[in-house]
Image (cartoon, rainbow, N blue to C red; front, side):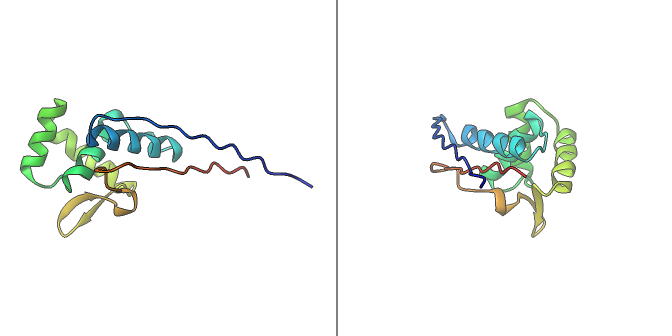
Length: 117
């Protein structure tokens, strides 16, 4: 009879603000799901999750200033993230898929199961 071994690890990581927390969350999601997201893509997802959407010109401007990037880069990233289902179009606005958009104003607790076979 085969037995199952469970390893339970509790890790706590403090983050200075909700942007940093969101970036860590999407980095973990990318790694666990083999999405191979770049740092800039993760930054855009986190920023969009917190701001609500990346459709407004002021949100795009703020992101570009904060991360020293261009509107064209944002458009390319949006295209890729829509293809993989991370971004969706909702009422004409580009948003993070609600399935992967928790509130970053409070603690986020993840349970990750890596199953064999």
